[in-house]
Image (cartoon, rainbow, N blue to C red):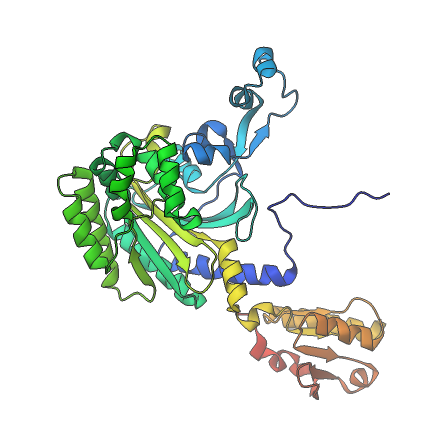
Length: 458
């Protein structure tokens, strides 16, 4: 009995139609990156685990896909650890490499490794897949693409404003109504100080980052479970429930956090970025959200998250400022800020809302039917001439029944079918059928290029 074929949970195959839609997303984002002056790099799918571990917090480390050492991977395993099932220690002995969790940490490693070849500020973009050992569900995959843009080597908040403008530009191109949420990690640090839990910032941010998923009551219960006092949680509650306009929220935060150095600095930075972005008259809604934490440990300043307004799918983009991520790799004092587009979630949103352009689904412009040996040879020469003109064209490879060839063209949504048969050979002509209307026209063969000029690939 043949083995049933399958793929790992949380991964997907993509059909030609799906790839056409995905490429529309990638092309739109890539074009925007270049428009804003970012240059492309790529890094390996796998990194040394020493590069990845400890950069994403306790939760993130659990989601890293580790790769068994090649050859005799049990060679370095301590028998005592094996018998005691010391999983963390065993993992370090069995695996030296892992699949990248995101593109930011590999980028920090890249900056350090290539620092002598980089001119700061360095604006890079990167579009590659990443992997997380997460529980698969709608909008959440184990293998997915990220499209990142970062600026390193500059402390200027103009970079945050530019990246927000880039987000706004891309989602306007997609025709998506989105809300860009903003906060500042320094504000969260100031809040932790205000409630008397300065040394528990990571516990607080990991918990409140789940508010949208599990609700405020469950977050409060988790905070208490993590050892945050009930008194501190009660002080935190009204802060997380802060309401009003963005200006009112900023003013309230400034009053609340007065006297906390980190909090005051965070409010000042957030106000500068928010006001600078508003001056550009963005299309997107913008919201100051004090509960926005983005639980990655490396963020130190402004943090960003984008949510689609017309679907329940979660975050479709995010990012923030990281002041010294390169420091763990031996290059201190290089500040950076970046954003990441979740291409797979954007796909789901565009598909759900029917926002993919019709032309995205087109394949070739014209299919030449195969009507016999001599006819096919003539058609092949026409196909070659059209391709030189930039027109997407192909010849059906087999001399099959006409019905079958027309069905093939129809299944591919080919708009035009060209026919060179016995009559056309004799008269040096070509017959073209419009597949949408069924109408046919006959043209001189020497005009074949001009006939399809309107369909030239741009």
